[in-house]
Image 1 (tube, helix red, strand yellow):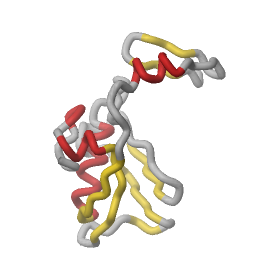
Image 2 (image 1 turned 90 degrees about the vertical axis):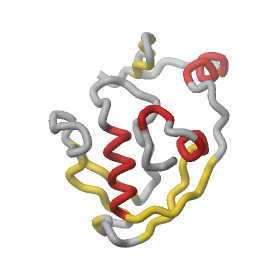
Image 3 (image 1 turned 135 degrees about the vertical axis):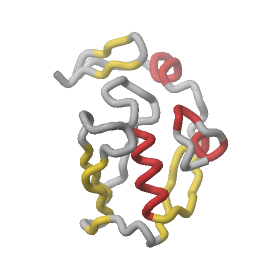
Image 4 (image 1 turned 60 degrees about the vertical axis):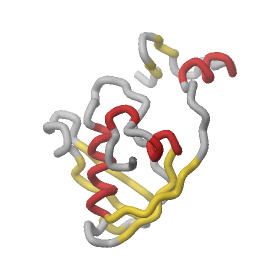
Length: 117
């Protein structure tokens, strides 16, 4: 099933969304922030992002092209990521990475994501 479920609403696959519906679902301004993290910090932040799965959450990561992640939703929270690659190479915990995120996650610990704050 390719439906999108947000909060208590279900949007069937291939259905149209109005601008108003998008604003209701995502009420925060979308301003990017670029931050420098170690690979270990990046992994921790992404672990926090998938910790609530299978419960739908606004913090679920949207990865850029060239970045790939696999995780096991049945594993305990904060131990779910099985693989994280950038440009086809595994993320190195001691290497530094620049990431762009919604500034909301950089300004406050939103949706339980502390690492990017």
